[in-house]
Length: 112
Image 1 (cartoon, rainbow, N blue to C red):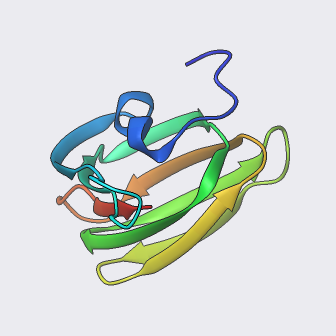
Image 2: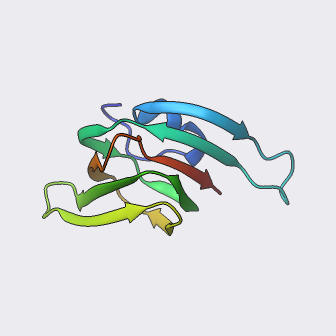
């Protein structure tokens, strides 16, 4: 992923380690794109490219401590659990890392 500073949410499953469980691609401008993903139990720091479109993330199972920061900045952590929603967009790449709580890997649903 080195050199990737901006990416569409549609290719996140190729850039962030984990398993793509289901996908529905938008068929028209009025449709939505949806992916359901399973992530690793533990993830060291990875660079997340900027996403130009708003991205809705829903935690569908599991729990984790997720930490993010601007490149080279201070880490900010949050506990995420099943049912949490996040609406995000980023003009610049960020770094992210996480540690799952328990034995179930975190699963999320992403939509644009």
